[in-house]
Length: 220
Ligand code: PMT
Image (tube, rainbow, N blue to C red; front, side, top):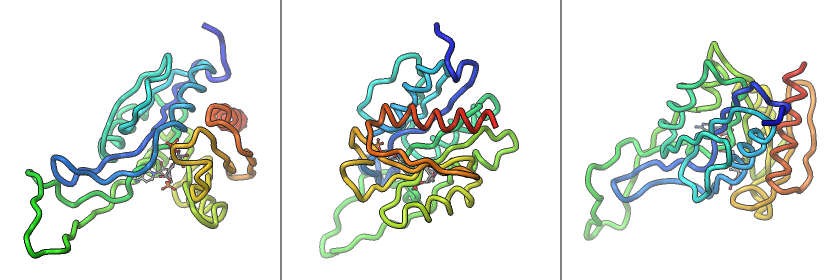
């Protein structure tokens, strides 16, 4: 097994969407395919890391030499992330976590009510996984993503500070050629003292560029 830039490092990556149950047959989710996170897992393993991929529901096969933990909800994703925190060197949050979940999961399938044209589902805020990791006393080097549809750089830098992250990868998800479900992405990576533009490229290439940025910051 070849020595790589991440040999001896444990990299934990969240990927894909979360599913937040409404009742036994319905859920709230989003369009994340998991491709970005799985590409990061593959690239980190190729560079010698021990990789744990905490994945929401996707159709993707588990990358080679990667331990995958499959979860559904944000709460399960948080629990799996915290379980490994003391042995994690780098945490990368590429998952599209639902910000809110139904306040209650109905025990039985919710029935249509005759004469009622509206139904209301009450939502409550989910825990913020990457912010929780970044606040932990044993915090690893913590990297977030920012999926924005406007003022990408400004919102991303605000998230970097507010969530106490070491680095953030900002992608514009209003452009359907990149971001959700596409094989390509374009992004700007921000850290405390600098930034790097990653022009349109495959998610596999972007994964190794992101790891290069992390490697440089880990050395400093
Ligand atoms: O999966 P693909 O189809 O390949 O698409 C890739 C992607 C567009 C999903 C990915 O590149 C991306 O941008 N992922 C982050 C999506 C997102 O939820 O962004 P956000 O700006 O809402 O969240 C900011 C950061 O906080 C993210 O690192 C997110 O993982 C994290 N977060 C958000 C909410 C929450 N409750 N917990 C979190 O950890």
